[in-house]
Structures are given as structure tokens and as C-alpha cells.
Image 1 (tube, helix red, strand yellow):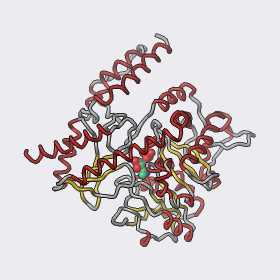
Image 2 (cartoon, rainbow, N blue to C red):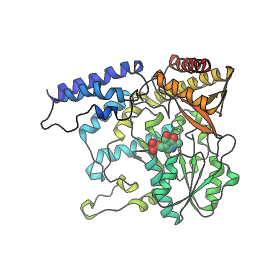
Image 3 (cartoon, rainbow, N blue to C red):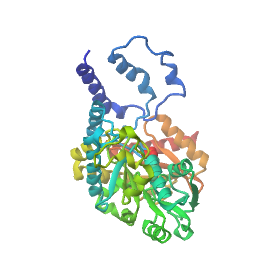
Image 4 (tube, rainbow, N blue to C red):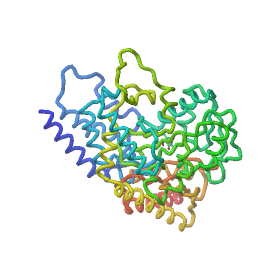
Length: 436
Ligand code: PLP
């Protein structure tokens, strides 16, 4: 077989997978160790045909896949690897451009800056920000906090009890000092509790992971400015919503941030991984990260994006984001976000109207936090049953110390029927738990 023939088969597999993924159980129905037990203990001595890899993908690995591309994947944050993004990943691997320095990958370096300018325009971010791509928001936030540490000479990082764990992890990694502040009844950072005088940075979240609450960024920006602290905004999930003007209320104050991260691999149809980090203080990022050994020196007067973050070798990630933006356009991206907002609102309405169920948090975006009347244990048992059914997949969180179910709409193929089915499964399993 040739590359061309193998490639055609792989593409056929991919196309067929996307057609049938909605019929597969969303959550992998395997036990830990089951997949490894099906794999040969030793690697092959001689090369096998690629068709053998495809066959084992289907027979051995597929049962161990939790299907993030499934229209009833409502766990974590729903995501989509859209077709243009998938194809661009294939092309990026084909080119295997490694953007260590501009001259090693001029197109990749320049497309990355250009596409981040495009995305900043689409999201209504201020003009003139410097943007680059990291793998994940965990890395983007680490980069921002390192720049803050170097720029301020301070070590304290302030964030709310609703901030994503990646913030605390970055603080630990950088040997900085965490200071957690409480959140209010609607899970937003309490600014009356904010002490920034000795802080290197404060991290505000737009769209927290548990409930998608929005921290009061304008007030946090005021306090950060007064204290000379770096303001980093984590909009990893909800930043995508800014493509819709009606959701830009949640962007208030972000124009004053020193850095902001939005994950294109969350709600912007781009395959994992693609985390967009913008800063209005690029010199501080470069000061923090620039370290050029002799063998990488050149006379080029250029922006080397590896000088703005921890990694030297950088994948051609902008290609997939470029493909997504070009193939969807502003209108296509808006249509997806608006449909998800509509579906989440619909689900929220069903929960509100149904006796025996309650909503547990305001819903700024496409995540609904709710629970069934009863104990935490009963809600946990309900979640287990729903996920074991394979018909839908949700996760839980804790809000105000209580076990809460969380339905996150974010997959581009999710329809109203899918959301309705999730609700039916929830009610069916709740009823059968009651009679059990
Ligand atoms: N920030 C927020 C608000 C998140 O919800 C998440 C992940 O869900 C992250 C950061 C971490 O993202 P990543 O997996 O890209 O590191």
C-alpha cells in the first residue's frame, strides 16, 4: 500500500467515524487496564502495514475511547474538532514545521501572529495585542505568571476559590505563593477580600470551570492597577463567546488585562491543542523567556515566538485555527455559539419547570448546573447510572459544598434532540433509582 492509498483509507475511517459517533456509547465502557491487556506485550520486529494499525484502532482502541466528538458529550466543557481543523492537522503533520525560530518556520511563525490578530478582531479584543499559541491554558497561564513574577519581582498570585486548578499548579511550578480569595453567592471573586499590595499577579476568570461564573474584571483591574500587579484573565472556555456581540458584556474590563487566554480547542471548533495567549506587555514575556543559545542565533530582525513561552519546538498549530476561521467565518462561529446558548437555555427551562429538580447556579453561557432533590449520594448514583447508560455523558462539581450535576453544551453536532435525550435519560434514571 502507498501513502496515498493508506491515506484514503484513514480519511474514510475518519469520515465514517464522524457519521457514526452518535451511535456509540459516549463514555468508554471499559475497565482500567482492559485496553493494555489487549495489546501485544512487545513491539513488532518487522514493520506491519498501516492497515493493521487502522484495524486495531477500530477493534482494540475504539472501545476504550470516550467520545469527545459525540453530540451527547456534555462533560467537562463540550468541544469539537471540526472537519477543517482535522484536515489542517493532517497537513501540519505533513509539513512538520518546527517553529523554534522565525527562519526555521517563517510561514508558521507569521501565520500564528496573523491568525491571532484575526481572532482578536473576531472576539473584539483591543487592537495591538501581541498574540501567540501555547498548547494548553495551563501553559499560557504559566507563561503569564512567569512574566508577572519577572516584571514585578513579587511572588504572590491571587485567584478565587473558583479558579481552575491550572492556576494553582502554575503557581507551584514557578515557586510562587498562592493567595486564594473567596467568591460570592454567585461564584464570582469577592473584591472586598482582595489584597494585592504585595501581589505579582491576580488571575480573574471569565467562565469558571464549575459554574462558568464571571469574575468582576473591571473592579479587579482597578485594584491591580493601584497595586502594580499583573492582571491575567483566564477565559479559556468562555472567551469564545465574545465572537457574539450580545455576549461581550462578559468582556468588560478585559481590555485592561496584561494578558488573556482563550482556548480555541474548547469552544472554537479547533482540535486539541490550541491555546491563544494575548498580552499588551510582550516585552515582559520576552524578558521572562528569551534565552537564545549560540546555535540558534541569527541576524534576522524578527519575532521568534519561542521567546514568549516555555517551549522551544512549536507545532504549526495556527494552520488548523486558520482553516477553522476561514471555513466558518465570523457568521459560522457565531451560529454555533448561539445554538449552544439556545440549547442550554432550553435545558435550563426544563429543569426549572420540573418538580423535584433544582438549578444550582446562574447560567451565563452554555453550562447548566443542577441537581435532583435528595442527598449528594443519590445525585452521585444518578450520575453514575446516566454515564453507564452510554447515552449521555455529564460530570459533576461541588457548589457551596453540595454535589451538583453539570451539563455542558459545546459540541457542534449537538442538536435539540440530543439535549432532550439527555434530559429523558436523567429523568428515567432518577425515577428508576427512586423505585429501586
Ligand atoms: N481555565 C479554565 C477556566 C478551564 O476551564 C480549563 C480547563 O477546562 C483550563 C483553564 C485548563 O485548560 P487546559 O486543559 O487547556 O490547560
